Length: 295
Image (cartoon, rainbow, N blue to C red):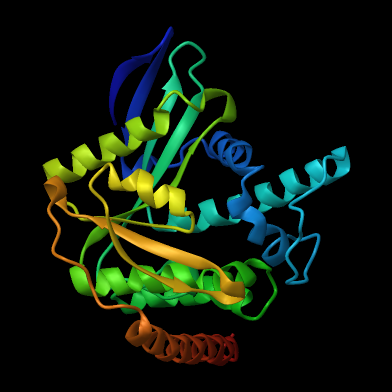
């Protein structure tokens, strides 16, 4: 773990980079930070209709939520359930974890998750595996209940198609890279530039280590924000319900190789991936049934 201090006004903070083996070590604190940061965000409107255990319909809620205590509590419960699922899936990928802690209280107040991808690895949210048969078997088994509909996380996967397509479009052209996820800061610490400090640190590490960086966002204002750090627009595509996701990339030291093809071809390739994933899941079930007959 590498750490250094910095100041903002009268407060002193510690920025840390945790190795993959130590990532998301404080699960409850990380979960709480995510929920607090995103509880009022319009970008989470889809969470209410697509993933919550309280409501299985795919109808979006508008307005986002009313101000009654029951509604707010339900939304906190829903987001806690959602992000607990996401963090557990991310943990399988052993991501790097950047965080900022208030030096006085020692609590983490800002965070950023960085996941490593290469051209042979499919996104775990879609249930795909890595390059090896054992990775495919492990993830195939893990995703069976989701694909069969026993868990509402399958709705999140379907709704996240646009982001996954942009990711595939980028990784298939540029190979190994790291993806930035969940840049967030506790509400009472916002406005101090903590998220910017985290992103600058990641970009500095990427320059020193020669990493391509990638991110996806559905907010136009965020695209303008990331341009300041040397990111360039890659492309965008539309997912279920008209949800638009844009991809942005950054090469080491701000270098950029010019753009990539748009998503049409990748969307066709994804259909083939889905067919393979279903066949593989069915195959795993048949193997389990076959093996159980020998017990």
